[in-house]
Length: 259
Ligand SMILES: Nc1ncnc2c1ncn2[C@@H]1O[C@H](COP(=O)(O)OP(=O)(O)OP(=O)(O)O)[C@@H](O)[C@H]1O
Ligand SMILES: [Mg+2]
Image 1 (cartoon, rainbow, N blue to C red):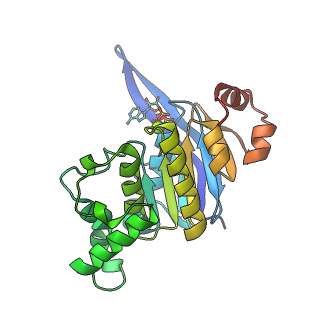
Image 2: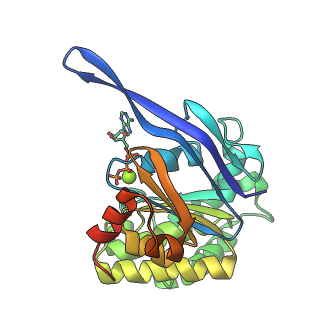
Protein backbone atom coordinates (compact mmCIF):
# COMPACT_ATOMS: atom_id res chain seq x y z
CA UNK A 1 0.00 0.00 0.00
CA UNK A 2 1.29 3.47 -0.88
CA UNK A 3 1.89 5.90 1.99
CA UNK A 4 -0.17 8.65 0.34
CA UNK A 5 -3.18 7.82 -1.78
CA UNK A 6 -5.17 10.52 -3.54
CA UNK A 7 -8.30 9.08 -5.09
CA UNK A 8 -10.46 10.98 -7.57
CA UNK A 9 -10.28 14.23 -5.63
CA UNK A 10 -12.30 17.20 -6.90
CA UNK A 11 -12.74 20.75 -5.64
CA UNK A 12 -15.05 23.43 -6.98
CA UNK A 13 -15.25 27.10 -6.11
CA UNK A 14 -18.05 29.53 -6.77
CA UNK A 15 -17.31 32.97 -8.07
CA UNK A 16 -19.37 35.87 -9.28
CA UNK A 17 -19.11 37.23 -12.79
CA UNK A 18 -21.33 40.31 -12.62
CA UNK A 19 -24.67 38.92 -11.48
CA UNK A 20 -23.93 35.40 -12.59
CA UNK A 21 -22.65 32.79 -10.23
CA UNK A 22 -20.08 30.57 -11.92
CA UNK A 23 -18.84 27.31 -10.55
CA UNK A 24 -15.27 26.46 -11.50
CA UNK A 25 -13.66 23.11 -10.97
CA UNK A 26 -10.13 23.85 -9.76
CA UNK A 27 -9.21 20.23 -8.99
CA UNK A 28 -10.80 17.65 -11.24
CA UNK A 29 -10.82 13.96 -10.28
CA UNK A 30 -7.13 13.84 -9.42
CA UNK A 31 -5.60 10.52 -8.44
CA UNK A 32 -2.03 9.63 -7.58
CA UNK A 33 -0.13 7.60 -5.03
CA UNK A 34 3.21 8.20 -3.35
CA UNK A 35 5.25 5.33 -1.96
CA UNK A 36 7.24 5.55 1.23
CA UNK A 37 10.57 7.31 0.67
CA UNK A 38 9.54 8.63 -2.72
CA UNK A 39 9.28 12.22 -3.96
CA UNK A 40 6.35 12.97 -6.20
CA UNK A 41 6.77 16.23 -8.08
CA UNK A 42 3.52 18.00 -8.88
CA UNK A 43 4.09 20.50 -11.65
CA UNK A 44 1.79 22.92 -13.44
CA UNK A 45 1.30 26.55 -14.34
CA UNK A 46 -0.03 29.20 -12.01
CA UNK A 47 -3.69 28.53 -11.27
CA UNK A 48 -3.56 24.84 -12.22
CA UNK A 49 -4.71 23.85 -8.74
CA UNK A 50 -1.41 22.79 -7.11
CA UNK A 51 -1.86 24.66 -3.83
CA UNK A 52 -5.50 23.64 -3.57
CA UNK A 53 -4.42 20.02 -3.92
CA UNK A 54 -1.66 20.49 -1.33
CA UNK A 55 -4.19 21.93 1.11
CA UNK A 56 -6.57 19.04 0.50
CA UNK A 57 -3.77 16.52 1.18
CA UNK A 58 -2.88 18.42 4.38
CA UNK A 59 -6.53 18.46 5.48
CA UNK A 60 -6.69 22.27 5.40
CA UNK A 61 -9.29 22.32 2.65
CA UNK A 62 -12.05 19.78 2.25
CA UNK A 63 -12.51 18.08 -1.11
CA UNK A 64 -15.95 18.00 -2.68
CA UNK A 65 -15.36 14.50 -3.95
CA UNK A 66 -12.84 11.74 -3.54
CA UNK A 67 -10.52 11.10 -0.64
CA UNK A 68 -6.95 11.24 0.57
CA UNK A 69 -5.50 8.47 2.70
CA UNK A 70 -2.27 8.59 4.64
CA UNK A 71 -1.04 5.11 5.48
CA UNK A 72 -4.62 3.92 5.09
CA UNK A 73 -6.13 6.63 7.32
CA UNK A 74 -8.59 8.95 5.55
CA UNK A 75 -7.72 12.63 6.00
CA UNK A 76 -10.66 14.20 7.86
CA UNK A 77 -11.21 16.90 10.43
CA UNK A 78 -11.24 14.18 13.09
CA UNK A 79 -7.93 12.61 12.05
CA UNK A 80 -6.01 15.74 11.18
CA UNK A 81 -4.49 16.32 14.61
CA UNK A 82 -2.86 12.90 14.72
CA UNK A 83 -1.90 13.05 11.04
CA UNK A 84 -0.18 16.42 11.54
CA UNK A 85 2.50 14.67 13.56
CA UNK A 86 3.27 12.49 10.56
CA UNK A 87 2.81 15.07 7.79
CA UNK A 88 4.08 18.65 7.87
CA UNK A 89 3.82 21.50 5.37
CA UNK A 90 6.41 23.96 4.08
CA UNK A 91 4.94 26.88 2.14
CA UNK A 92 6.22 29.36 -0.39
CA UNK A 93 6.53 32.53 1.66
CA UNK A 94 9.12 31.88 4.39
CA UNK A 95 8.36 35.07 6.32
CA UNK A 96 4.58 34.61 6.44
CA UNK A 97 4.90 31.27 8.22
CA UNK A 98 7.01 32.67 11.08
CA UNK A 99 5.44 34.73 13.89
CA UNK A 100 7.64 37.86 14.03
CA UNK A 101 7.25 38.16 17.82
CA UNK A 102 8.67 34.72 18.55
CA UNK A 103 12.33 33.83 18.95
CA UNK A 104 13.73 31.07 16.76
CA UNK A 105 14.05 28.70 19.73
CA UNK A 106 10.31 28.98 20.38
CA UNK A 107 9.31 28.87 16.71
CA UNK A 108 11.23 25.69 16.08
CA UNK A 109 10.02 23.87 19.20
CA UNK A 110 6.40 25.08 19.19
CA UNK A 111 5.19 21.88 17.46
CA UNK A 112 6.71 19.86 20.33
CA UNK A 113 4.64 21.83 22.83
CA UNK A 114 1.45 21.64 20.79
CA UNK A 115 1.80 17.87 20.48
CA UNK A 116 3.23 17.55 23.97
CA UNK A 117 1.01 14.63 24.95
CA UNK A 118 2.36 12.45 22.16
CA UNK A 119 6.02 13.47 22.33
CA UNK A 120 8.26 11.02 24.17
CA UNK A 121 9.80 12.21 27.41
CA UNK A 122 9.27 15.45 29.24
CA UNK A 123 9.35 18.80 27.48
CA UNK A 124 11.24 21.01 29.90
CA UNK A 125 13.01 24.21 28.95
CA UNK A 126 16.51 22.74 28.75
CA UNK A 127 15.38 19.87 26.57
CA UNK A 128 13.49 22.19 24.25
CA UNK A 129 16.56 24.37 23.78
CA UNK A 130 18.64 21.29 23.09
CA UNK A 131 16.08 20.05 20.53
CA UNK A 132 15.99 23.47 18.88
CA UNK A 133 19.79 23.49 18.56
CA UNK A 134 19.76 20.02 17.00
CA UNK A 135 16.99 20.99 14.59
CA UNK A 136 18.89 24.11 13.53
CA UNK A 137 22.05 22.09 12.96
CA UNK A 138 20.12 19.65 10.78
CA UNK A 139 19.21 22.53 8.43
CA UNK A 140 22.74 23.95 8.37
CA UNK A 141 22.33 26.73 10.96
CA UNK A 142 23.94 27.09 14.36
CA UNK A 143 22.88 27.80 17.92
CA UNK A 144 23.56 31.52 17.66
CA UNK A 145 20.21 31.76 15.86
CA UNK A 146 18.22 30.50 18.85
CA UNK A 147 17.73 33.84 20.65
CA UNK A 148 17.09 35.87 17.53
CA UNK A 149 13.86 36.92 15.78
CA UNK A 150 12.76 36.03 12.22
CA UNK A 151 13.36 39.51 10.78
CA UNK A 152 17.07 39.14 11.54
CA UNK A 153 17.41 36.42 8.89
CA UNK A 154 17.56 36.30 5.09
CA UNK A 155 14.84 34.61 3.05
CA UNK A 156 16.90 31.44 2.66
CA UNK A 157 17.62 31.31 6.39
CA UNK A 158 13.95 31.89 7.17
CA UNK A 159 13.02 28.97 4.97
CA UNK A 160 15.63 26.82 6.76
CA UNK A 161 13.94 27.79 10.04
CA UNK A 162 10.58 26.75 8.57
CA UNK A 163 12.06 23.44 7.52
CA UNK A 164 13.56 22.92 11.00
CA UNK A 165 10.13 23.60 12.47
CA UNK A 166 8.53 21.14 10.07
CA UNK A 167 11.06 18.49 11.17
CA UNK A 168 10.45 18.98 14.92
CA UNK A 169 7.94 16.15 15.21
CA UNK A 170 10.03 13.81 13.03
CA UNK A 171 7.34 13.58 10.34
CA UNK A 172 7.33 10.88 7.68
CA UNK A 173 5.91 13.25 5.07
CA UNK A 174 6.65 16.80 3.97
CA UNK A 175 4.23 18.63 1.70
CA UNK A 176 6.38 21.28 0.05
CA UNK A 177 4.37 23.92 -1.83
CA UNK A 178 6.79 25.98 -3.93
CA UNK A 179 9.30 26.06 -1.04
CA UNK A 180 11.98 27.95 -2.97
CA UNK A 181 9.93 30.11 -5.35
CA UNK A 182 10.47 33.22 -3.22
CA UNK A 183 14.27 32.75 -3.10
CA UNK A 184 17.15 33.81 -5.34
CA UNK A 185 18.43 31.10 -7.68
CA UNK A 186 21.62 30.32 -5.73
CA UNK A 187 19.85 30.30 -2.35
CA UNK A 188 17.06 28.20 -3.86
CA UNK A 189 19.64 25.65 -5.03
CA UNK A 190 21.07 25.38 -1.50
CA UNK A 191 17.64 24.83 0.02
CA UNK A 192 16.79 22.24 -2.63
CA UNK A 193 20.00 20.37 -1.87
CA UNK A 194 19.22 20.57 1.83
CA UNK A 195 15.77 19.05 1.19
CA UNK A 196 17.37 16.33 -0.87
CA UNK A 197 19.93 15.33 1.75
CA UNK A 198 17.38 15.53 4.58
CA UNK A 199 15.13 13.18 2.70
CA UNK A 200 17.88 10.61 2.25
CA UNK A 201 19.06 10.95 5.83
CA UNK A 202 15.62 10.85 7.46
CA UNK A 203 13.94 8.61 4.87
CA UNK A 204 11.03 10.98 4.39
CA UNK A 205 8.35 11.03 1.72
CA UNK A 206 7.81 14.27 -0.21
CA UNK A 207 4.99 15.81 -2.15
CA UNK A 208 7.00 18.52 -3.90
CA UNK A 209 5.07 21.22 -5.72
CA UNK A 210 6.59 23.60 -8.22
CA UNK A 211 5.89 25.38 -11.48
CA UNK A 212 9.48 24.66 -12.54
CA UNK A 213 10.07 21.51 -14.57
CA UNK A 214 13.88 21.45 -14.03
CA UNK A 215 13.43 21.69 -10.25
CA UNK A 216 10.86 18.92 -10.17
CA UNK A 217 13.03 16.80 -12.44
CA UNK A 218 16.00 17.29 -10.12
CA UNK A 219 14.20 16.44 -6.88
CA UNK A 220 11.40 14.04 -7.77
CA UNK A 221 11.43 10.35 -8.49
CA UNK A 222 8.11 10.64 -10.28
CA UNK A 223 6.24 13.58 -11.76
CA UNK A 224 2.52 14.32 -12.11
CA UNK A 225 1.63 17.13 -14.51
CA UNK A 226 -1.39 19.22 -13.57
CA UNK A 227 -3.25 21.23 -16.22
CA UNK A 228 -6.32 23.18 -15.14
CA UNK A 229 -7.01 20.85 -12.25
CA UNK A 230 -6.42 17.63 -14.14
CA UNK A 231 -3.49 15.26 -14.12
CA UNK A 232 -2.59 14.99 -17.79
CA UNK A 233 0.49 12.84 -17.39
CA UNK A 234 2.36 10.87 -14.72
CA UNK A 235 5.66 9.07 -14.99
CA UNK A 236 9.15 8.42 -13.73
CA UNK A 237 10.96 11.80 -13.79
CA UNK A 238 13.75 11.24 -16.29
CA UNK A 239 11.55 9.20 -18.59
CA UNK A 240 8.74 11.74 -18.54
CA UNK A 241 11.09 14.64 -19.25
CA UNK A 242 12.69 12.82 -22.16
CA UNK A 243 9.48 11.42 -23.60
CA UNK A 244 6.71 13.86 -22.76
CA UNK A 245 3.38 12.70 -24.18
CA UNK A 246 0.95 15.51 -23.44
CA UNK A 247 1.32 18.79 -25.37
CA UNK A 248 1.04 20.63 -22.07
CA UNK A 249 4.04 18.74 -20.64
CA UNK A 250 6.06 19.57 -23.77
CA UNK A 251 5.13 23.20 -23.35
CA UNK A 252 6.25 23.20 -19.70
CA UNK A 253 9.57 21.61 -20.61
CA UNK A 254 10.20 24.08 -23.42
CA UNK A 255 9.12 27.06 -21.34
CA UNK A 256 11.75 26.59 -18.65
CA UNK A 257 15.45 27.29 -18.97
CA UNK A 258 17.85 24.43 -18.19
CA UNK A 259 19.57 24.57 -14.81
N1 LIG B 1 -10.56 29.89 -1.64
C1 LIG B 1 -10.76 30.04 -2.95
N2 LIG B 1 -11.89 30.58 -3.43
C2 LIG B 1 -12.11 30.71 -4.75
N3 LIG B 1 -11.23 30.33 -5.69
C3 LIG B 1 -10.08 29.79 -5.29
C4 LIG B 1 -9.77 29.62 -3.90
N4 LIG B 1 -8.54 29.05 -3.81
C5 LIG B 1 -8.11 28.89 -5.08
N5 LIG B 1 -9.02 29.33 -5.97
C6 LIG B 1 -8.87 29.29 -7.43
O1 LIG B 1 -8.48 27.98 -7.78
C7 LIG B 1 -7.55 28.00 -8.86
C8 LIG B 1 -6.31 27.22 -8.46
O2 LIG B 1 -5.63 27.90 -7.43
P1 LIG B 1 -4.31 27.33 -6.76
O3 LIG B 1 -3.86 28.29 -5.75
O4 LIG B 1 -4.57 25.94 -6.31
O5 LIG B 1 -3.30 27.29 -7.99
P2 LIG B 1 -1.73 27.04 -8.04
O6 LIG B 1 -1.49 26.00 -9.06
O7 LIG B 1 -1.22 26.79 -6.68
O8 LIG B 1 -1.17 28.43 -8.58
P3 LIG B 1 0.21 29.20 -8.24
O9 LIG B 1 1.28 28.52 -9.06
O10 LIG B 1 -0.02 30.60 -8.70
O11 LIG B 1 0.46 29.09 -6.76
C9 LIG B 1 -7.28 29.46 -9.16
O12 LIG B 1 -8.02 29.83 -10.28
C10 LIG B 1 -7.77 30.18 -7.93
O13 LIG B 1 -8.24 31.46 -8.24
MG1 LIG C 1 0.19 27.76 -5.42
